[in-house]
Image: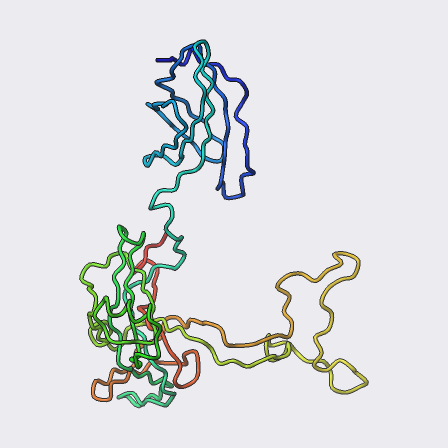
Length: 328
């Protein structure tokens, strides 16, 4: 057995491949010399792109590759046996565990599970005291069924996947049909996730009822795809003011100057200019539920929501800091 005092570094650790900005794909090569014919125990640590800690390494006489699930490295060793000197080459590579291969989830946490709905149009609603309120009428197609429950153990985050709007089987691909058949649900067009702190109480093929999740007077966040306007100018797209229409002015609806000349010699990123308008996902926050009509299966929400009649909507409990989401 060789001790640390018997080892001598032939040369410092030398990176073989260039390490990217995220510290991935780091290869290191080092050479060790010892007066003992066999190296039994080796313990060292270093920190560059990753930190390794290897201990109790057995070195066979043939090239091999060993993996260390408890660490983030894999070891491949190759050496030649000499009665007077043992030459050992170690190549260290990042070892990716099952948890590290999971995708990075960037979706925000919801205040509670929500539903999907269909925009029907707008109307005026008269409250009992006679006040007129502009409301958006929202209806529901067949759906709002839980298709998958994701947990920290299986997916790395907690979420509830919900399906909406029943369609014929031939409208879906075979992978989509297999996913829905696994949950035992009907074929549905739309699948969306609601990331939650806890998914207790949810199970596949569970029906979500709007009346059980919300009540009149609650505040909700409604998101959807806005109406596409096509290519529009600066006045309509960014509310710019037009120039004088008389007195010899030749700048009416034109954009005008977009920056200086030699310095900086370029147009700043994000400059408001004519371009494609609408057709993007937008969320309208803290809208009040005015009325829930169980007979007509519609919901009246105060104010306007994104999209045209027939548009898909996502309705979730409004996020209120300090009430249903933490302040930090």
